[in-house]
Amino acid sequence: MNGYWFLFRRLTRALWFLPALFCVSAVIVIVLAYLSADLLPESLDESALPITVSGEALRNILSIVASSMLAVAVFALSTLVNLLTSAAQTGSPRAVPLFSGNRAARTTISVFIGAFLFSIIGIIGLSSGIYTLGGRLILFAATVIVVFAVVWALIRWVREISVVGRVVEMTSRLEETTREALTRLGRDGRYGCTAATLSSSPSGQTVSAGAVGFVQHFDPHALQELAEASDLTIHVLVRPGDYVDHATALAVVSGEADDACLEAVHDDFIIGEERTFDSDPGFGFLVLADVARRALSPGVNDPSTAIHVLTVQTRLLADWALTEKEAGSDNDEPPYPKVTFAPVKPSALLDAAFRPISYEAASGAPDVGLALLRGLSSLARVAPGAFHDAATALAADFTARATSCASHAPDVAALRKAAAEIGGVVSDAERPRPSTGSG
Image 1 (cartoon, rainbow, N blue to C red):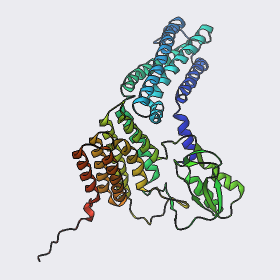
Image 2 (tube, rainbow, N blue to C red):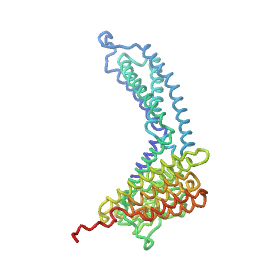
Image 3 (cartoon, rainbow, N blue to C red):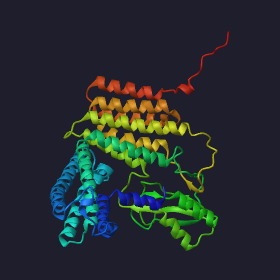
Image 4 (cartoon, rainbow, N blue to C red):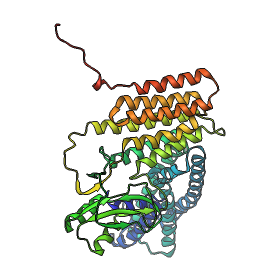
């Protein structure tokens, strides 16, 4: 994903963006209604037209729309704030931007605010007498469209407030966002770059971060173009989600690169105050784990939500691993051959997804612990090459932690049995086939 496109996506997700865009559109419609008045001659006989509208009637319609839309817009914003507060308390504050940046909510509020501004400007124009018969007809047609848009927005808003704030809706949006980030990561975990060799450190000119924060995104396409233009090899040393400071090396440039080129390499990395979902699947897994941990807290005590989150994380990792398995030959040239990148290991994603939950599940309900081991067992069985060793190690660590916290012997025995089964998992592909010979 291009760096400019990444920033544009962040801009368009801001809650103020669409309302501002709708307000500008409303002003443009009002101005066009005035400028288009010349399409109909001012001396035209009103009786010759199939429909006419007086300025007073149009002013009354716009007054009703303006007064109602102001109240509805304030109500919608206050409702959204309450729903976002509820979502932050029941799920995770890190997931709130997925709701506030939701297109349905932003579009609905934008229609309300845009309709209010449209009505106010229309009333001002009618009161000043700047509209002729043609201008009033165009303004009336635009008003009818606005009324239909408001009705559609109200229906959509009723549906939206029925789901915003629900934990299931939050996990669903987190799953969708994390899946998109896994797609950008790629089936090989390299964002389309060449796999970096770990045998030795790359040599060349170092590009430092120069700031404190988190790597939110890097643009491998722009780095590839720089490398091709100057015959360079760019070794990326950080990943989206990594914490960096002023001295952290973002990349090493091998070849003859001037200061302008090094500055361009630096600009292809976006460093911000917090992690984002777009290019960082680990952050998605972390926020999902936060939802499960909060559900296991004594104040909430909702183990079913934790079990649901474990199922979601298992599905995400299994689907990604199966996509990786079906990728084809590893010898295929990557899209960005002059940019090297240390692949994100499946074990790192598994650790980010399950380990935070294991802390709370060890001292929580035994059914959550069994659900965690069930998810690890599924991953070890579905993709043993990617997850078997990491799942076995995490299961052993969780069992030891749970054993020290549990007081009921049968619960401990059940956890140990489930963990032991993970270590003996063998995929169907690795099972010996029975002989078909006639002996």
